[in-house]
Length: 65
Figure 1 (cartoon, rainbow, N blue to C red):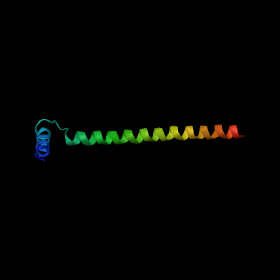
Figure 2: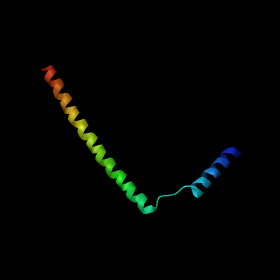
Figure 3: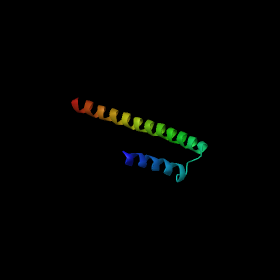
């Protein structure tokens, strides 16, 4: 158990002393940027999926006559 406690203490020490944190304003703007691109990418995937679904549906309708 002492090993786990020591590991956690050292981890917090690393985060406090050796990690360079992004300034708050930059972190917010980057988060918004990631959210916007995620929404755009998901809409693009949804659009392609819808088109392929329609094409495959038309193909099977054509085959079944």
